[in-house]
Image 1: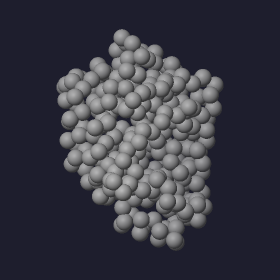
Image 2: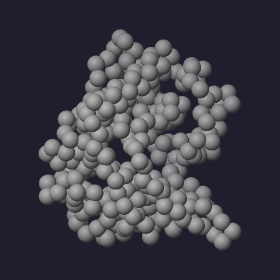
Image 3: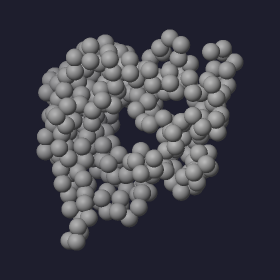
Length: 294
């Protein structure tokens, strides 16, 4: 691709405000949602999307543990020392932050209220898993790493959950599920997986590629945790799969010159029944339907 077209594509990203990188998480979503999020809309517009209680639960459990256990945390690329190491204090801080964010709907507000009782038990399971993997090693959290595969015009950038001199750990929480019954809202535990999710392996593979450190993937709920240590050939395979998707996205951007109306003729329309689109607000939904002529 010539540099003039590459620059045109970069400038068209982020709703026309310009965008210069991909991420493991952006490469894990369906193609329609990628173009909706990172070509149609700006970062400010993406922030208007309403995340459900499960997304907030993960932050509420993991952020306090990072401050509790890690020597340093990287915030916007800047290394800082946590101001408080007390787990409970940091949990309360996260809950205060979440309470200021608008819930998706009435049911989500109720689920968010009920989930709070499971935050500390889940955080304790995260503490146990981190200690098992790293023992007495010094750890840092949220360090940015990046990769620039040959021929890709957008870097891939990501943040590592936990890292020591020779190990990395990617964490996935499994929040409690809630079901409406005639007696009100009832909760039930999400079981931990028997095998890692492919999307999570791709994320871990990216961090392994960037660091060449021993990789671990951890799942937790409020009762237990499970640690996976994938083989390197397996991670190499999933890294290659992730890069293949990055080039598919780039190829679509190239042949359409990042024109969303042209992309919508080449990419299947979004499936609004999928949870990937549950955060879309009504004004954005209307705009998306116009682009795909739905």
